[in-house]
Length: 301
Image (cartoon, rainbow, N blue to C red; front, side):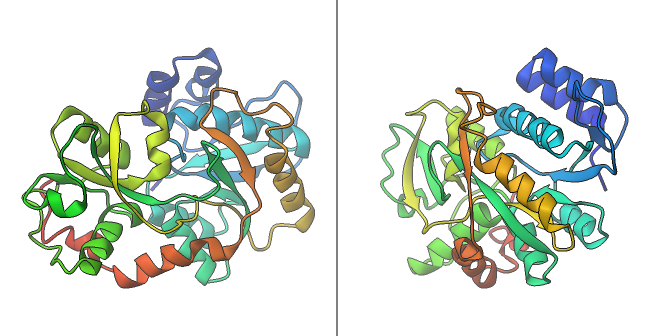
């Protein structure tokens, strides 16, 4: 089920507070799909674009909006954006051929790629890093030196690969039983979990390294870091014509040189990616299948 644009409008307006984004979303209040604005008249069938949580944090919505506007102008056809909060929503849209292009969560990509439904276009580069990682963090100044030191503490988790899955994988490798290792495990999104740690409501959390880009340097201390974890990819449905895929890829790979990406953005470009970038993500998914549902033996919401 698609999230209502009323909620999205409030979120984006609060985060950005700019006329650009307000015009992008507020004029489409109450719709489940949003047309990307353009000064030019666009013709042809709309290109349906799915977006999920943006790498680098919610502040990077403005960057993706600008990039999509450039894609629309280059293709000469309208773009209609659909926003999904969960991997299941994106998977369902891809399976029903309701999306042409999508910025996907890694979990959703693993699912649809296994079924041969999509091909990779590119992945974002965040703070000049072409690959992501899962990291365990605490506040700077905390005495902890590894995840071992967090035993018995409150540990905020997200139900994704960088959250519960990586924490399970790491604790098992260190010889610990994940269930009961922490005193409390509140479940929330990555940015909310980071806010809990920053405010002292939780001692630690596990997030994507790219999620730290929206926080001031020095806010958190990294205790553990995983092998390379592919960035959330931008994909095309397998049956989309090759010329459209090539043109979208070209816009992404040249976005920095064309001045599309704001200089203040944590998104510092896009790169040609490969399926091998997601080998560790598959390992996490395979060895921790069901960990998200267990949530450390029953997490406290």
